[in-house]
Image (cartoon, rainbow, N blue to C red; front, side, top):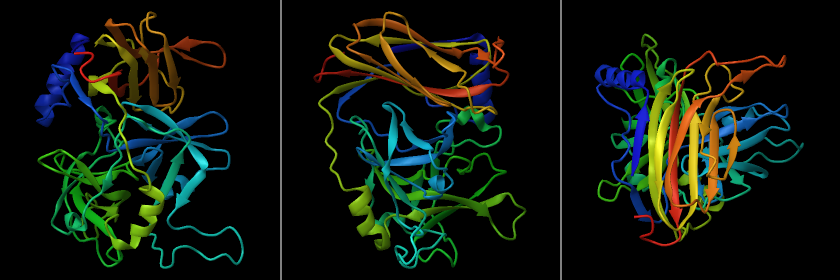
Length: 397
């Protein structure tokens, strides 16, 4: 069980947001969620790191195997020599992409006389790449391909992405998620694209924006909650003849037979076997805004026999992509190993002692080259997730 205590101004802000938008952010469960198996996280975040040390959010991504992710090829085609690619998924954290295991569906050969692959590639639809990871995920459940019948025009699907757009920073981490009606894409899709229209002037419309390329379109089984992948986001363009507010979102139709052999060989070649863990969710998808000088606190109750405690923090990087000023603070009694990048931070504690722990999210000081330090000058939204892993079912209850 968790208790979430925040500053009074933040509570008032959330009440205002509820009244203004008609919906509140995902609520933290009153009781821990514990089960055997794997966690499902439809969308991950692709990070690009430069040789100079800077790293920034780049695109969204989909986990298709324990050590493979699928995204849009244009997300990496602008990368420079020496750049380091990483992916981040809530609940389990950061993994580095193996540069030798980057496999695009369509590509241009760098060697004279070598054939282009595959024939008939279209910039409108075939913008896909598989990224192999140096270390696998062991807790997250990869998405599988849905049946083609679920991807026909008129069907309802869901989309998810790690983007943000304009002033909607409070939705960073879960932005642009929602249901859409699949429609006609036009004459250029060759039957290999899925599209939906949205009105940027309508706050109720599901839309996509920056960082959403590579994010999933999927179906949800109403009986089991199982998610099945049908598409990967390419981007959006204005609808001709409109005033500019209407846009068309375009996704690669992964259920089309044109991609089957490549997907089977490169993206979905491995079987997933969940770890022998009992997983207790302590904090899940709790998205809030935070001001400089303020903090938010979470109380985590860790049961006996926990093998590992995992905490992940992701946040909007604000107008300055580095350094990471938003800070996840753990008590000294927890010996944590943390990795901190531009917009994500992941901490792991091996064999944490049972007990109640207070963790907080706050602002770290910004220090310049001259040694002068001060508070950051921009607001940011953040999302915290935390899970405890137990070595057998029933522990931690």
